[in-house]
Length: 204
Image (cartoon, rainbow, N blue to C red; front, top):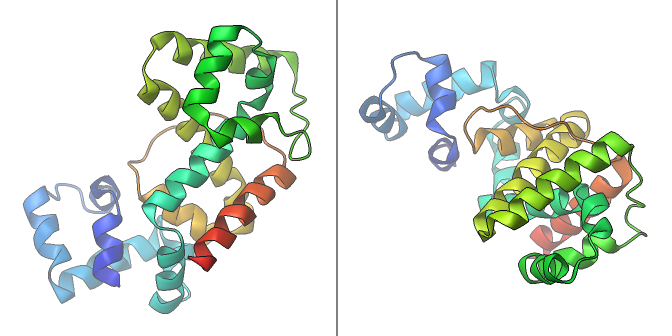
């Protein structure tokens, strides 16, 4: 399990703990029992404190439940919901068609007022609308996906950092350290989306 965990962790996190750690040395450390223990110890003292503190058995369950594809799906849905104010405000035919095609069932999530009323301050509404318009005008699916994923990551970090610190750390460790946009989703809609994805993961 430890080897699987360390393989998924982005190399940049190891390099913050061990300056000068190159790819070859990191690869050898990951395949050595002593090297894996050292890498895990560095994580446990820093960005993986909550993840590794309870012990490897607890971490193993969380990692199995929240694989990278499942976290990607969670991030995308949270990002889609975070952009709901802008998605609902978009009424032009072509942008709406694009959003429905790109988001699939996520479009229904964005317009579902039972999940979130999407009421935000004018300044935030304007920022979200501008960013969404820019992603749509780019014409590339990857641009919109990246925008939603990045915002979704920020929303999960803000919520899980308080409610499920181990999950927050695991999700953060899968990517390189980076600055995140400001989160703005209330707790309840994040909990609804998180519970939905967690239930699917447990049932799988």
